[in-house]
Image (cartoon, rainbow, N blue to C red; front, side, top):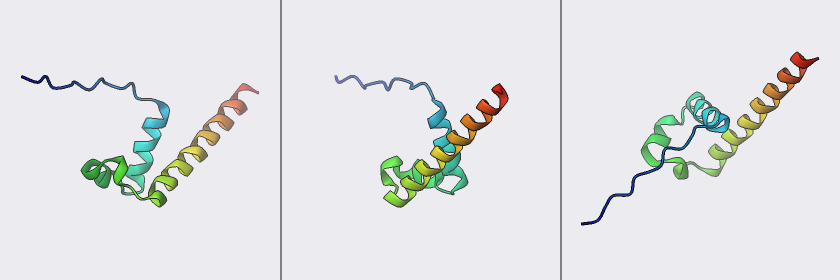
Length: 68
């Protein structure tokens, strides 16, 4: 009998949280749940990646402003 491989639970990173949050805001979460991340078009993936970058910059900017 073959043993089923158990997937290791990945620790969710900030990027993962942002990725899912942005996908949901763009209305893509149902598509991701149905076909996975590989089912997104290049345009959709790029949009998510771009928004992640923008949010991370904003977060870093806010963090630096608090330090001053």
